[in-house]
Length: 280
Image (cartoon, rainbow, N blue to C red; front, side):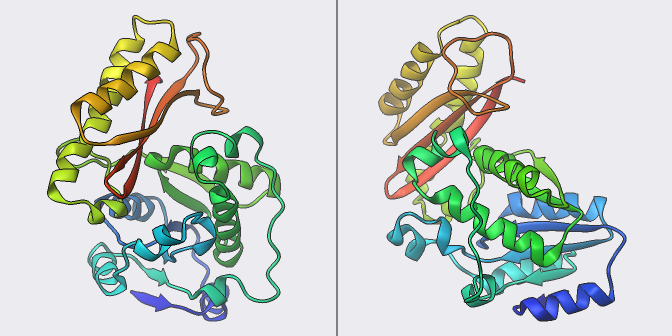
């Protein structure tokens, strides 16, 4: 496994030895089984796989959140080597955002106004910045993202469409712990009790999906979900939304079209998100 921190060095290698198919998995490190499943899928579908590890400051609207984000590059490299990753790109902030860097001017519309966009202003602007830059450096044929970050996947698809970028965007299923809790780097910051409490998020999503089959009012379902989390755990819900799968617009009524239920909640000082299709 090769490890690069320099943009020029990585691009130089890829220009000399371009594979027939290049898969790319962008991460912020603190890797877990969810990330490794993305690597597995990329390896199955490509001749060469690159994983990036870069904690992108541009997508943190809360400075304390950035400072607390878990980092362990040595452990991440060991995990990727064991999984058969070919190349790791672990650049500095200066490599990703050099003085001549120009920020993309992408209008995301409703994609950045709802859910994560509403509660984390500027977050998706930072996502667009780093993903576009990484795509331009690596020029992958396929790029792999976890479905847990459902809204982020929609933003990346929009980025690709507007700028006519190369990679096919592949969203892979959310990987969960035995309790149902979606695997996340932020889970490292949870106490054992907070982890147990956080299982309520997935349980609520599953129950919400079941209730949606017989209920026509999304608003009452959202109110029930908030109440269920508050009454059965110590978590503090930030939002519960039921949105159109294609546009992420909040649903006012069910009409049979694909819909996704999304939840964000605080477990102590750790913010967790999850989602589940309720009408696939």
